[in-house]
Image 1 (tube, one colour):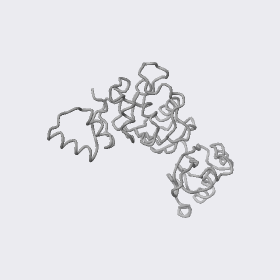
Image 2: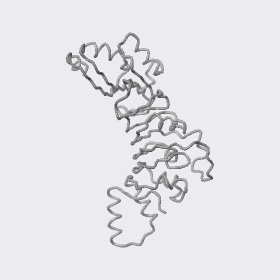
Image 3: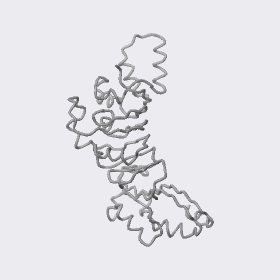
Image 4: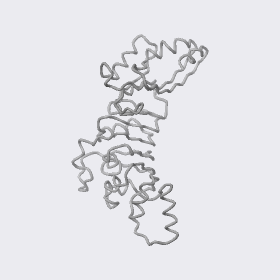
Length: 289
């Protein structure tokens, strides 16, 4: 790709978004400047988002940080640039381990997609991002989600990848004593929430209205029906009623649980519907009132 870009010497505007796998070295700002931009003398507008996956971390000589990437700004013509480094779990060539996800991007951030954001991210408003994937080897606490709603005001689709329990909230998980320990976070535009590769605490974080309010949520993706049953207390918990008020499109695995909760008679039309739901998707209220 670099060789191709170097041949575009008359290019005046470039928008570049790439993810690079399997490297042992970060693609930094200096690389972008000297290996790409120096070959484009007529370039007037350059918008970019580059993520490099480095690792496994056991093979790295030292722990990478966003400060390491920021140092590459020295003696380059790129000024409005930010960076972040996050450590994520992944499987490469059937080997499971932890890698560093190192991102550099131009400001303002003009893409509608951001991936592998973790607990440590710059204090920036990502005004155009509607899809966000967050992942970390450390838990996401309530304060982290407060930062997310401030930094991503138009967020519509959120994917959470984190198997770590919320340390600060573990002792009150699934409590129904109406004890308000946090300010309520509101995600006014969030319509899709994906927690299928996450600890059950994150379903609790978003379905419990004493923690989070998601008025537009219509699609909730998770792995095990027992998780939803536990968080909603078998669909009887008052704290989850409001966030589950709209119709959900959820994985087929949950259809068995919802159907059993209906306690309906065994009639031919309903049996036909049940078979269809099992084979495809269940579109039904999360909370049966």
